[in-house]
Image (tube, rainbow, N blue to C red; front, side, top):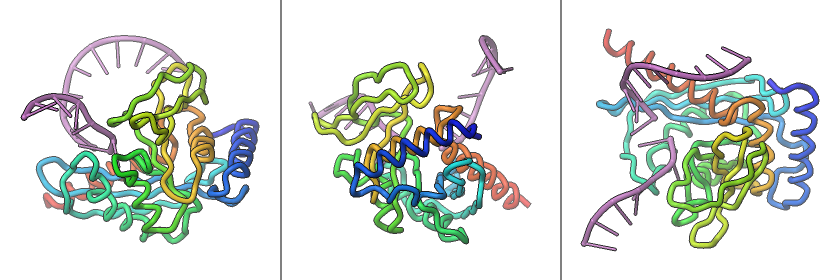
Amino acid sequence: MLTEAEAKTAQEHIRRAAVLEESGPPPGAVRTVAGVDVAYDEGSDLLAAAAVVLDATTLAVVEQATAVGRARFPYVPGLLAFRELPPVLDALDRLRTTPDLVVCDGYGLAHPRRAGLAVHLGVETGLPCFGLAKTPFAFSYEAPGPARGDHSPLLDAGEEVGRALRTQPAVKPVFVSVGHRIGLDTACAHTLALTPRYRQPETTRQADHLCRTELKKALATMTR
DNA sequence: GCGACAG
DNA sequence: ATCTTGTCGC
């Protein structure tokens, strides 16, 4: 959880970034942020998707939903959306509340055809959305400075498609890219607000934990 | 042509 | 994504 001072600073950064980006959600409009993730069982096509909604300021869990199903598309680099979008949409549909912003694992505009998972998800739901990946995929970047918040452009043949962002001091950066109805500065400001303690955003951590737990439960139930 | 390649 | 041993720090 963020301290009151940290939360205030983070919200101020988000507000300042948003006013500089016409495409960003209006300042103060993001009250809740959802994290989505999918866990797979190797050997079978069983999967579990999770959507966890957090209070954008306190990072407290507001609501969560899951969806167990079968993989209908293999993992192919560049085609992740075809595999993950259906189960993620199922989990989001089971939410009673509609989040103001969605953070997904993977990329948005940082994609060979500028159409990563976060773009598909945003266009499909109409919600502001951005992608956050743990590896640079096929892109290049210069190491950002060592401080939390330091960043450098993520490049695809010289074109900036996202940003390598340091979320914890001296810890390897995460890779942020725009998905839908949000700007890169705003997406990075939200990422920092969601990472008071760990490299990965609280949204991703919560969703990751939930879908793994749900997948194990589904597998156990099936054996009986 | 070959290797690398979000999750 | 998933598997997997040991190690480090709060």
